[in-house]
Amino acid sequence: MRRRNVFDVEALRLLDTVARTGSFTAAAARLNYTQSAVSRRIAALEHRAGGPLFERLPRGVRLTPAGEALHHHAQVVLNRLTRAEEELAGIHGGYRGRLRVGAFATANVALVPNALRAFRADFPEVELVPIEGPSGSLLRRMREGGLDVAVVSDYPSELPYEEEIGLVELADDELFVALPRDHRLAAEEIVDLRELREETWIEAPPPGRATALAAACARAGFAPRATVRIGEWTGKFGFVAAGLGVTLVPAIAAYAVPSDLVLRSLGDLAPRRTVYAALPPAPLAAARALVRLLARKAGQ
Image (cartoon, rainbow, N blue to C red):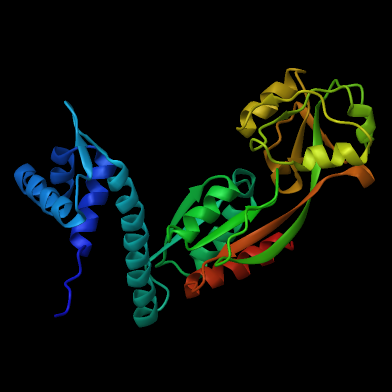
């Protein structure tokens, strides 16, 4: 006798909605169900799963460990189905549907917006969904089916290896040092990194991982002083402008540097990073088209 599939798509969609809203009532409103219908469907799903998927709280619900495991797989399935629908729409109707585009923060200064503007002019019927995040988290999200294309880089540390994801190199990006205009080295065209050995560096390195800054300083014969951990670029620029330290700024983000700072090359000791476009194993035609535009804009 053929065994019936335990988890149907609607059950997984309901699980995902309850997990995201944290409430049977909120999930019912979002999916146009009654609250009692949601309760019954979740109870039936828990019976098929072999145990509780949600812990009932005085206000709302939260996933049990079993629920978290099933929710992870549900997200992968639902993302893949959404992607399949969009790919079929593109096949049957040209470039249509949605394109989920991930990028790290400084790629969104100029490179990605310029490429998206050109893409929108060529393919106006494709809905663009920009998503910002660190490169490592973007790759993980792509592996789970949540992104169609992403712009990632190996800064501040190496990219995690993702076997199923293809990388297309877009640019070799030099990292400049940002200094306040009244800094003693601000008038120099090229700053020797060794002249900055006593500076405090503003950065937010991933815990326990080697960084481009540490590697560059090691080549220069010293270790950087204790850093001030600031992740957002506006915050980094504010700290540098206040004379509280210096920071590295990628060339592709130079447009975002405020006028009270200067960027200076570190010459032969300058750290560099590689910027890539990442694609899933079976990329959408629209994603491949965007990668071609990204490569063109990166080369300008």
